Image (cartoon, rainbow, N blue to C red; front, side, top):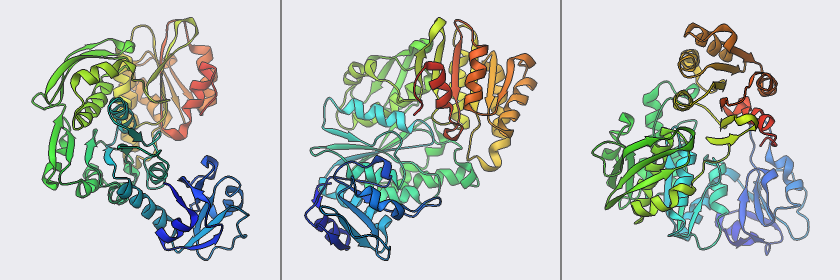
Amino acid sequence: MRMTAAELAHAVGGILEGDGGVRLAGAEVDSRRLRSGDVFVALAGARCDGHDFVDEALRTAGAALVRGDAELSPPPPGRALVRVADPLAAYHELARRECRERRWQVVAVTGSVGKTTTKDFLARLLAPHRRTGASEGNRNSTLGLPAEILSQEPGVEVFVAEAGMSRSGELATLGEILRPKVLVYTRIAPAHTEFFPDLEAIVGAKAELLPWLDSQGTLVINADDPCQESFPDATGARVLRFGGIDSEARIEDVEDRGLLGTRFRLVLPGGEAGVELAVPGRHQIENLLAAAAGASVFGISADDVAETAPELRPAAHRGRVLALADGISLVDDSYNASPLAMRRLLELLARAPGRRVAVLGEMYELGDLATEAHDRVGQEAAAGCDVLVAVGGANAARMAASARKGGLAEKAVHLAEDAEEAADLLNRLLRPGDVVLVKGSRGVGLDRTVAALAGEEAA
């Protein structure tokens, strides 16, 4: 975004107060993330109201987008207020305008698992060949993604966006903003089930992006995921399938190297190549395949992917492997968790050499599925690890009980109330050569456990 405060007011039909000439170059809804020249979008949330932070925000931000009737101090010199009826609607309109006027080729990545890693891989595959921008981290919501759109550098040709949701309607909003040229689905599975009655409802919510896909664009779907079978019928766009044995994009001859990663043959439309991926886990092959399929739409070849793949690394707390003292390996996947994601990481742990220690936090937002899901994870832990540390409250206790019932010895199952207690417990339990998996929902805060073990600062 490159405009003055006066131009901003005109674009959203707002009323300007203060310096209309102040130049703006980005937007943010979180006052803690503001940079000089940003627009602070003041939104009322469940726990706080952004209007309470406007005075503080204008120490950094060039302007604030605020509600028309909000009682606020006049902006200081060199700053502006833009008053509108609905700051969120105006914020979304700015993001729509940015996508339209910048004429990006937008790639949207969505699904229930692997979105952030696939988005990051895809952006890295495109970067040597196109001026590529991407949303940061998992800023994939109707609040975070518009800020990423409005804060891109000039000259971007392809913008790779992660689109996420926890409730129906959210992806429809993002689709209207993005209007993607390429739409990539990873895999759809039960997640955020507290807000959906069943898997069918989740599939329906994920499908909200389909009407917004450019009819001349490309839909990239996972042929191994039955939830996506009907998606091609909802669009006139070209369909590119990945994953199945007859798919245009697929993987062959996989050599699993455990924590060292994998080697395999990548087949894309137009060619194939041997690829080495240093990120461990067969699920990461699927993430790379989804990214490579999306990149192939822009002419990226299998040889191009093979050249970039050895440099790919997971984002923080999404599968990175840390080498600790005494030959201990720690797989840090602490950012978030769902039943499918838990299963995938436990399968990785089961193939690791040495004593296998699973540190598993509770999974949130599962609603009525929570009991069954935690029971199942406990059973899977019993099959895939030698020591379990379950972290949290009642559902953590349920995981622990299920692991004991599944055959894990009583003395090998431990319960910790929080991330700090888990770290203290692990400092006493760990032995040289152990392989430790840490995974749980974001709210459990197991990144603090990782930080304590690795001597880092928590995010």
